[in-house]
Image 1 (cartoon, rainbow, N blue to C red):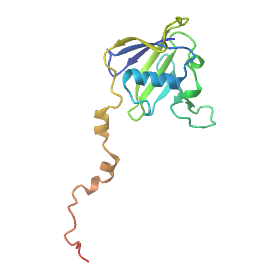
Image 2: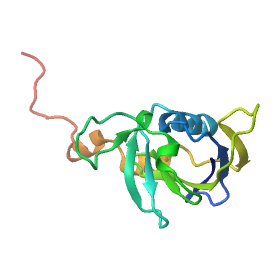
Image 3: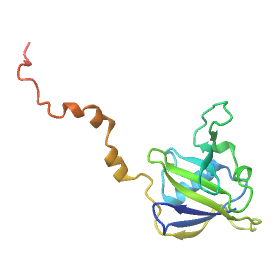
Length: 165
């Protein structure tokens, strides 16, 4: 499979990956993280997508062990060949779950694996990827402790409180 990877945060960022059809999503996640210098242990999900980039089935880093038919499926249990069937099929790779930031993957071509070629492979790399964690978003949200103790911001102590017993 040849995938084109794009970002809505940086129009000049492009990656093309050649991967084997039987690669599972967990290994694909690890490869993307390695290529983009992302932390692979941070939460992430793949979603199948329609032509309008609407999310459908979710594939998560961790197994949710839910019996519901619409429940997320663990990445390690699914191969690309099980969910990608024809050119232009799409995936959304959410790499920042809290910021809902994603990369958009589209299947450009399928071909027989080349003998002697190592897969997965990055065959096109243009410009820097978006940072894994958006610092501006983190600063804007602040800490949950900041929010919880906001009303105590002007507290300088109690003049009538005595430390001596």
